Length: 505
Image 1 (cartoon, rainbow, N blue to C red):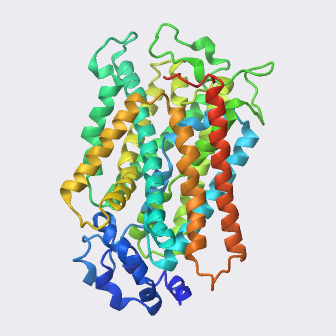
Image 2 (image 1 turned 90 degrees about the vertical axis):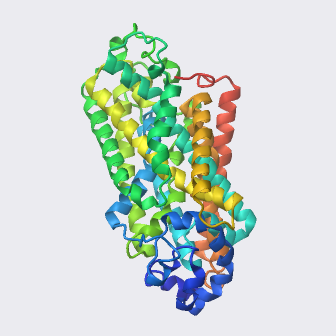
Image 3 (image 1 turned 90 degrees about the horizontal axis):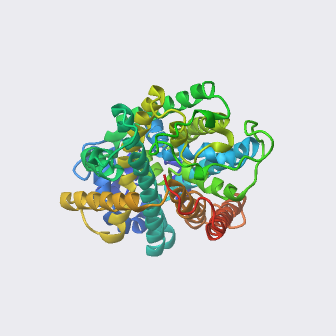
């Protein structure tokens, strides 16, 4: 009976979308859907708070259960939303990743991770279509009960807190540089407006918090488009500067500006006779960071199902097209940013690309505009990433509570407070990319979609030895392998006194 559910996925508009208002719509469900309903009762209660915030409805009779938002997000706007969920601070570390792998090996790894990410979204969408659930944590509940829900919620919380921390980390270090450049301050004093810690708190309270308090994720679609346009400007500037910066660039460093002359502790060793020859394949101690950075850069899975639910005329095929287009666009942008950033600085590229430009000319007007664009982009991305975390916390701590404004606001305030503390005390951005990318990212991209798929898809439809389930099992194994290898390399790198340990910008 469950195959009928899957085949009707595109025909039942948002009625299967989530777990709210199940009682109101049971009469409208097919027998197959009704058979699945008992499995969905617990998630139905557990997701009321966030579902009411940004999950649509299709039938008028559900209007009282939801808000008046009806899943009217267009295909193009959904691409913007998912693209913005993918795009983030990860793009700033890709040139450094290429410097530590070489162009050919980087392209191979980037292609592999992008393809695997698309496949994992396919697994998520197929699983959610069978059981009529569009929330990551509740797929975990459907597959493994409470432990599955808790594991998914914890992974989403860690991953997205890491992502938001990395975004605000950029605000912490780039905003003071922008203000210094505006004020032409060569030797900054102790003014509060040049202190990155204060600036992060100000941005969090004045910009991020108001956006994070919105009930509907769809309202952030317009900020997603603007955020992506800022990153496109960043990419254009990186390509342009490639032809403006001579190599080696060290001759143009402003040694007198101590605060702006970023330490070269993160640069790659200049191996070989010439520092300006691109390398096709490179292996060194920092290569271990490449896979976590790439995995971090493509994580959008907690946002996939909410965006799916808000999509106009939702179907698995339509949402897969949204995902594939978003991943393809980000793939192209990632590769171009990494390639031209690497070809500009070669072995001297920093773990955070924008800091390398500040070693050339901290008052460059184009780079100043790029910094503003990146600051705007990452700031506007934080509220989108915060929504799945708040829902995950709701699932873990208040599984049977209806929507409540004080709790809605309190969770956002506590999250932003915690993230600000992490940003103020975090050692450097590479540590955030490495640890989070090596743990929660493989879980969300590889392991959870595969094991949820294996458990949820009925054995009558796909036996355990069928090709799809064997592929899913191999996919999960690959995720465990990536996690173990990445963590092992990073731990070895730290314990052997790597040049990256303990250094910060």
